[in-house]
Image (tube, rainbow, N blue to C red):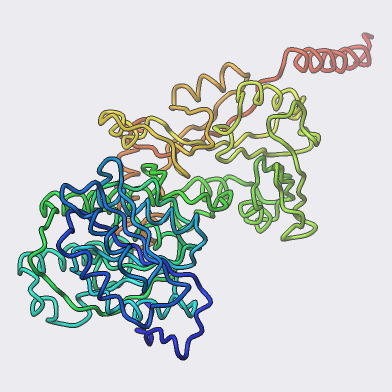
Length: 518
């Protein structure tokens, strides 16, 4: 994501203000500076649609009293002064203000610090892109004016730390912001409704978490230059702890994106697609497509959007796809047909014995009762007994084992610990399932982790896959990300009895009709 170009400031004389704006002042031990900060709010914002909210975060001084006194003696704004019953922390105070802005029907909320570190005079500049609907958030940056931060009194160690952390954060998120650590921020309340900011920390790295949420949600962020001011205000931030919290937060977000760990604050409940194709490298999809026999009649159970079914059809297969939300139209009419079916139902909606191959790709782990499902499949196939090609996640993968060792076990959006998984398997438990439900395994091997899905298809990801394949040959149970199984059903007793009787009848007829003795 790139930042929006610097827009012109909001001008009440040219930009009609049809939005309600809340100027939200966070205050802690700010008795000596609060009145000055409120005085510095530009006269151009002395409008009926603009209100001020001051939240004193259980200060040890007279901040609340100063706010109330200002409220009683000034009429430029409609001012609300609140005091928390218990100190909420920097992030906790922001949550209260943003919730207030949403609940009271404001369109824009502007965060201002009660210690005067961020110039209220810049509010019209920062409001511009939000008032005109050009951005979902506007951040004031002290780094856009090269050298301005140092000239404004920012200590050199803070300047260097800011630059290093910002570069690291940009690298993790793929962004190009000039600064992540300014506390001068304005938000559209419509955008705030779209992110779970209330799940964020109450500490100072709240600003980092909400920025990550905006980026991951694909919301528009505009950066604008602001002056740097370091006065006599007291800094309550422990620099080393803050840097560690920021770095840990960024890494946690990145690991969440890679589906190796689940963090609810970064899950926005976006519609999940069934799966994306994993072709061009060793994967469950490439192995399944390779296993499909040209011109075979294929049953693709849990076909999703039909992406793999399309690859089967390209090989000349006639494909029937089953899924609860199967596509209404076939991408290749004449080669693919789709049937809607809940996989947890008792009977198949089609005659399984008509098929040469049955594919169960990343499906069995979603079933409530996979043993019963496999038994129904076996009985439905009758005497035809098609090939079964199945893939599933390997819960014994070393990353999962390491997470368990560290006490970390939670479900996520995708991957081995997908939240929709109801059953998890190792090589041994999957083999037992096949044996106990009446199948003979002809091939069972490991599948490497889909590194290209996480870091792109490049030399490095191909190298990782090669290394993973070598390790799989040594210890498949430990280094396989998924398991690939090729199997056939063993005849049921009824089918075997039927075949025995039919075969015996044919042999008897041969004996009876054989050459008669002379």
